[in-house]
Figure 1 (cartoon, rainbow, N blue to C red):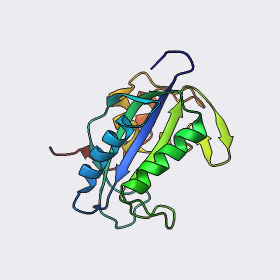
Figure 2 (cartoon, rainbow, N blue to C red):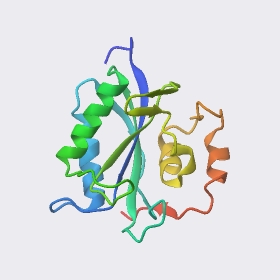
Figure 3 (cartoon, helix red, strand yellow):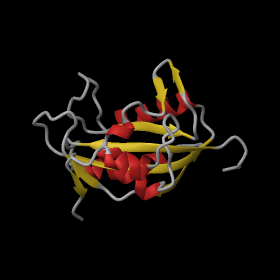
Length: 170
């Protein structure tokens, strides 16, 4: 991918329901493969997988979460559309907010862009409050700083210390 007009993108992946014969983790792994197949998107790094309790607490099954670091030439809304296409392809049905799901792909940040347009707020407005985003984010972008507050991951992780999360078993 040519360097000009490429942006660094961080995408969170999560699932807590099986899809067809795939476990939540297998669906997340399929999502990574689907991202690798998207034109104009280059996957540079994939975090390890984590298991986390739902936020907010709901009695749902635990989530499998990870983050991928990519480069893209896609405009932010075109990237969002592409990610929602992958979600649909892997069984995502949109119902109520915070519902259990077969797949969730969220853009955490694109470079240091701060925007609130149409269907997209960057950086993701709740990412810094969620251990299930911050731990895998540290795996692929340890130097990342929240574009809004300027806080690094060590400071942000202190703020989510009570949330249930652990590396997923192999």
